[in-house]
Image (cartoon, rainbow, N blue to C red; front, side):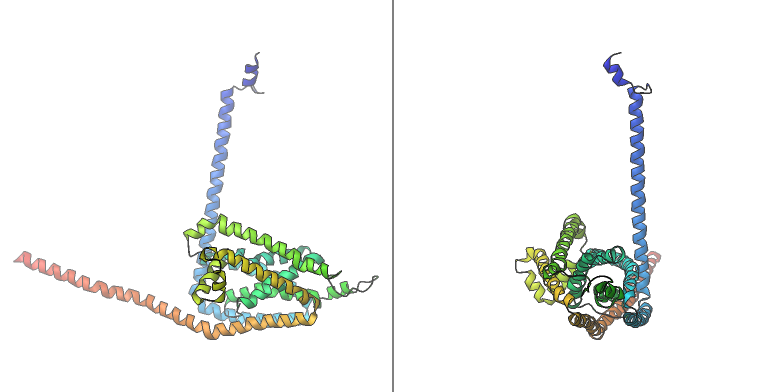
Length: 386
């Protein structure tokens, strides 16, 4: 038998044509399976999007009632949280778990409807996900704790003050925005100073006294894990964010100007108010505003992370900082209720009255045309009779 004949037969003695046909049939089956799976994925995505839109529309229809219920639950929840903070500070992390797994998915549903879902790629959500991993999987890892402490009491905490987050009990969205930035700092404050397990770690049996938990060898160790390593983690997030939003999803954002990102919203508000941020971001020209925004955010992050070192070392300083954060969010909430909300109510009522008047105006516009048609019909009938 020649070598070509040996090549043309397989183990079962099938001819090359039969083998090719089988390969072709299998390839067709694989292609059909892929097509079916892709269709199912698209259908599932469309179904979830429709459900998100439906839920958000229903919430808007019952906005006033929802706001009243939210205000009631918000005030009661705030009082209960304050009681728990004093009575059992070691249980505050469980409140954080419940908050994250409940309200972050709800925020995604609401933001998906509003076309704000790219906000969930912001640093605050990146940091909160790291917090959850630390608290659930590595609660006694001292170095991981320091990194999370730097995030919570650095960029997140100061963003609460700088970006004027408002504690408004009648708004679920504003409550979540405040807690995303405020709650992690309180969690790590209680672990640092008030948790009984921390006190045990500070004075372990059979060993010499340790004056703090986490244990700090020297200032260089503290600067490494409160500043250096967190800054590397922040840089990683910034690179990933830029690749996703400004490279991979660039065309999607250009096609739909209603899709919001942090940069779009902040630049829009800064331009409208002609604020100092707008003037600073334009130092390198309008074409480089995004680059200046990234640079300013990096400077803000470096400065706030550096401040976490004295906050970590001083109990009094840390307590004052907690009071400052809560006071700023409550003050901003009062400003929103007294200054911003009345204007929003007037605008909403005006739009509602305009929407109610449109059918009436349309019917009034249609009536003269109907009368003219009837008049022309009567005139034509008279001419026809004559």
